Length: 98
Image 1: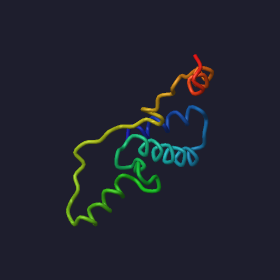
Image 2 (image 1 turned 180 degrees about the horizontal axis):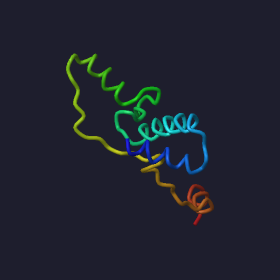
Image 3 (image 1 turned 135 degrees about the vertical axis):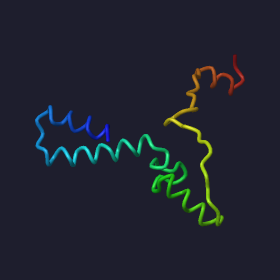
């Protein structure tokens, strides 16, 4: 509720009409929840479904309730280290020269 009020006040100060503010705020909240709430986020193995949908599918497959007890947060590109290399040295090493 508080987030909704903060966003609405922001757009009121910008002079947006009330009927437009409501639509902008709803869209903003949906985006916010998809980024912040674990169950609303895209499932890492299939971006077409949310984590909540993946949990429901898993429950259906195993026939029991699934409880999320932990998670790992990944950032885009995290763990990818760019290797610095000297192309001339690689060519020399491959050709057997020093």
